[in-house]
Image (cartoon, rainbow, N blue to C red; front, side, top):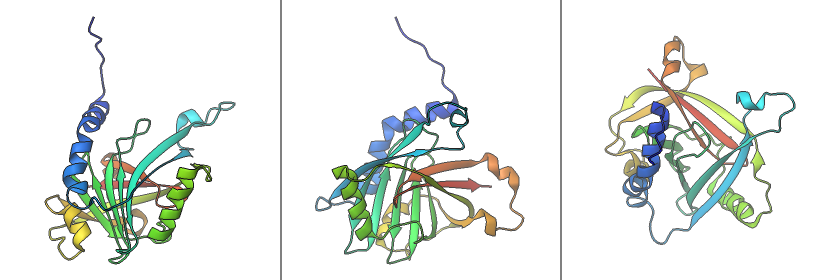
Length: 219
């Protein structure tokens, strides 16, 4: 007997991405940026989502959502390259992320949309590479309890960047041949079209001892 299931468009997108994301990452990240000499760190953290309706039920046990990632952390280059796979239990997108401390830039490649999003590096929430190595070491050894909280960023894609060649070799290799957009914080924009809220998506990763949820909206 063939089991028939009906999926929402979002679920279909997630399932297709789950099948294709590894090949896509190989093509866009590992094949272009990661090398055989790199040490790949793997870790997982869980966070309590206070905005999830199931967590607002009185008397219920808190439900922690997992966030997993792989990171190529290069202290000599002062850079962290992070893979976020398709999440199993949340509504966020898979992504390849670069935090470049030399250029002072962060780049997100959304692997569902195929677009790159760039913004100044926020050093108040992104650990330097040396500290990130120490964090992954704690996660691997079990010395750090991976239940944490979430910090939310609310960003808007304000303009297309047609030339990424001046943003450093790592970001260039990630974003070249992809549509790229500059991000700005929503609270710094005047007259932003609130209807754009319908065209938003999220990326979650942990560049620190907490989860960062980056919501990106585009008009």
